Image 1 (cartoon, rainbow, N blue to C red):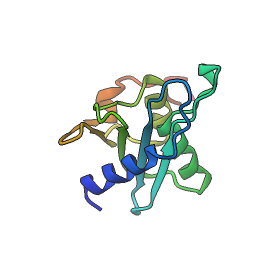
Image 2: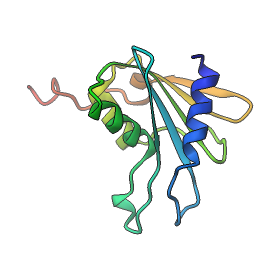
Image 3: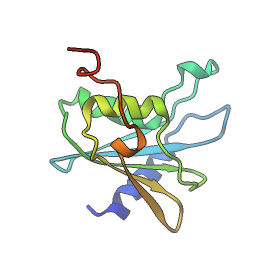
Length: 131
């Protein structure tokens, strides 16, 4: 699967989003190193702090199914505005992903690409906790 196909999967995931408050659909496609892809979408709650983000839904699904090695993440919104994972999602991803995880952000006709370590330098980790 190439980058465009992974972004297309993230776009497809936006269709499952539950966004009655913001109407801002986000989808994520997280690819494991063995090529398995897990999808996530945002799920809003009237208490916004209880809302789930697409990236964490995809990550939870992958981990729940026994996967811990990841190669790429594609993120898309219904607006095709280059949405990036938020700080909370970056930290969650850093628990399971290396700094070199490729993060692809859908900008409609183009895409931007980052590395997780670039988006979240000095992440909190077992090492920083002294464990």
